[in-house]
Image 1 (cartoon, rainbow, N blue to C red):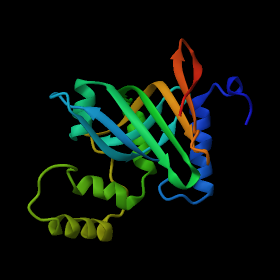
Image 2 (cartoon, one colour; image 1 turned 90 degrees about the vertical axis):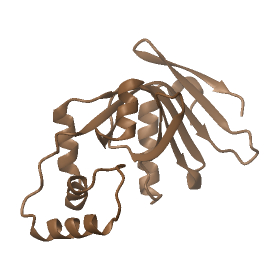
Image 3 (cartoon, rainbow, N blue to C red; image 1 turned 180 degrees about the vertical axis):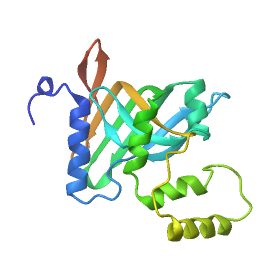
Image 4 (tube, rainbow, N blue to C red; image 1 turned 60 degrees about the horizontal axis):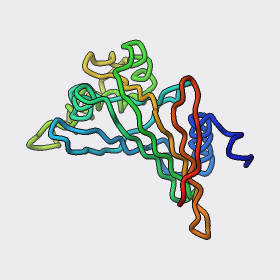
Length: 196
């Protein structure tokens, strides 16, 4: 790797790390913890899958009735954490989340496997239920009779996170791990090393 000043595009490097995790067959290489803050000031975390890295943003999808979507609407300041233990790497991102345009949500919905599309139609993620078996029966029925892919539900969308900071962490055998902190600086990034 070059000098620290040579790498000042953290989202490009994050993209390369995800691609390497895919090549190394790391399970769920694009999974990340997504942390929001509720109206009561308490943090809330869950695992989501990154769908796309844009020039200045990270994109994933969600049902818009979920707790995470409601918390983003009330407080857009969020954190993301990727962790690849077998590669000795993690990436921590902070930024602001916003609802992306409808066309992007529809595009990403169409890219999902048919079973995942049908699951979105069948289940109201996060809402209380008495029994999961009726949902399984409905999903199995739809999978059997559905001739075309369902339309993207109106209450399903894409979230775009525009990072303010990106910390790229690389493990070292002597425990002096490399921590590079990138901060948004106008249209670019400033970068510093953090003590491990």
